[in-house]
Image 1 (cartoon, rainbow, N blue to C red):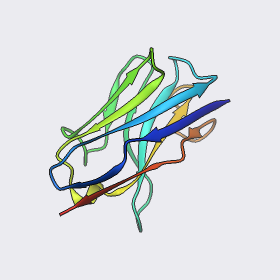
Image 2 (cartoon, one colour):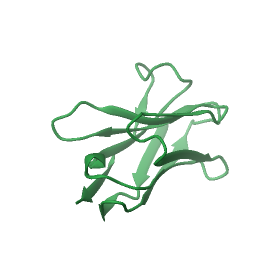
Image 3 (cartoon, one colour):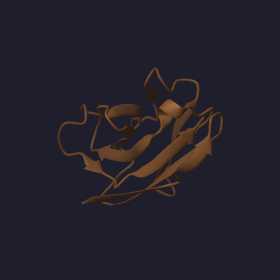
Image 4 (cartoon, rainbow, N blue to C red):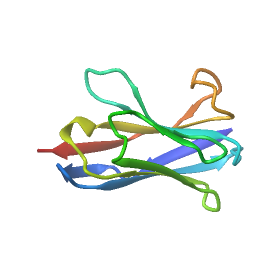
Length: 120
């Protein structure tokens, strides 16, 4: 089993920065595909950023150039550096992992989420 615990959320003003962390434990390996998702009130869940086992990252158009996903293999931790935050970034952010990048349909483990609020 895999366990994921997010941290680092909070409240910031427009233009501010936050770094989210996702500590992974259990049967998780460097080959896993990991990602950040967000769910804002009244909207569907959105894939924010994904990083595969080779370290290749993809981003939603809405966050390109502002967010950076990274992994620290030694610490088994996934990060999301969020810069130039906007009010529309306000959401609950979730970390997720799957054995390989398969579209987040099956065998997905989710964290409990950490909330980000960006005020104007």
